[in-house]
Amino acid sequence: MARHTDEIDDPSPLAGARIDVSARIGWLLRTTRAAAGVPLRELARRAGEESALSPATLSRVETAGRRSGRVIAAYERSLGLPYGHLRAPVDVLARTFSYAPADTEPYLPEPTLAGFSTACDAVAVDEVAGHDWLRFAEYHTLTPFGLPTATVRPLVARLVGEVGRSAGAAYQLRYEALSKLRCSPYGDVVAEEIRQALEVPGIQRSGDLLSAVTERPTPELVTWCGELLGHESWLVARSGCLGIQNMRSVGGLRRSDWLPLVPVFAAACDAAAGDPLRQPILSGTLACCPPEFRAAVRALLTRELVEPRRAAAWNRSRRNRHFAHASALAGQITGSSQGETMLARLLFEVLYDFRATHVTTSCFLLAASPFADAVRERLCVTALDGPDETTRHGAAYAFSTLMIPFETADPVPWLASPDPVVRGAGLSICGWAGVPLPGDLLRSLVTADDEVARDALFAAGMSEQPELGALAAARRLPAPVRAGARWWAATGGRIVR
Image (cartoon, rainbow, N blue to C red; front, side, top):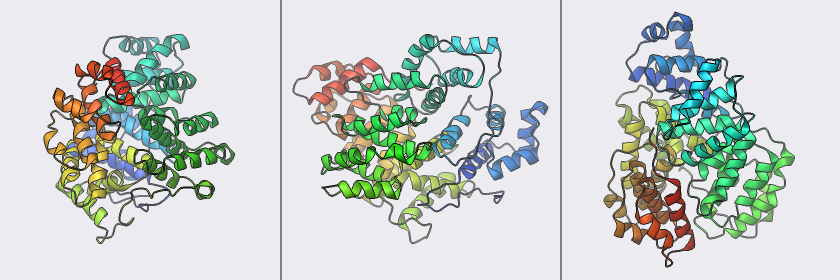
């Protein structure tokens, strides 16, 4: 459906079952081009005659949101963006929602032995860049070339270990590389390596791995995610919820594949009654499921289940204070009307939507957009001084999904808050900045197995603090905290390229 040439919006209902994927693709392309100050005619000239892209064609691509990997790659080259900068978030978005438009012209790397060899050589070095991981994955999924499984496995294991501690584009490119390999003939290798990674005691960064492996849903994964709901680690249990939500959205499974999960899910909900680390995400995950699944689970519950965190209303009325706040943030970020309408929608989802697939894909788009840095800064203000707890918590949680790197960070104003969610956000920002915590402060924050300790370990791990070894051996600390410190000490720190 055609849209106004100056503004692209997703007109679907805020609480609707579907979003307008095409509109979001068009918005990312147009705002990126507009921010670079490149008119359509100039973009067509830069793309070259061999691209066969006229200004009229490019306009239609943006306005209709046509999904074309070849055209999006031309945007990247013509605007001087890194390899995969736009394609990665678009492909993640489209793969997440089963009704998304197909890629009419997929991007294909040059199918030559020389190109394949170069892609393989680039991941055989000590420090691999994110775009090299993506190029490696694309050669192994989109061309006739491919290394033997035994050779690919250690590379996949390394990629699995890097995804969760990467920031910004380095994260998006690695996640997309891992997901592409999961949806390829190497998919079983990816699944096996992710399962092995989750067996390591104290794993701290499992969410992205469960999201990646569930990009190709199977009945076996439904069973496994159900088992993870009762995992001794609340972090892993939460990741099981994310996997279930992702498979529900990606689609491809039969109704009968989900039926065995009903009693398992109900038992997990009852076991988590009163547990603030587990119950809210179980509630949100159940709310994302079809009505018949929700009804079947609720019929088995013996304990009351809390309601998921929600917006005050799910409409764009000015009387809806939460959408009004998202709109105000969008106006502050853009400073104009260019891209503001869609930006408000994406910010609303990041702040208030309980559906992890909506939050995650909106974060991918925002982090790849020209507004990324401004979004990061406005969310900092909102997390500290937002109008209500729902808004402050939405902003605080957003940093762990946006994964935008910070150049510097100061935990002091965040730790002054009595709200543990806000305190944790300040610690996670230190992690994304690679800023170590003072030793005494770190030790004071990890005395309980809670979200603040998780975020303190994240800051220490991403900055590779030497205190991690002592924490891993400190018998006075809870066993999960010691295991988490041990995991970070063995895994390594922040990756930004």
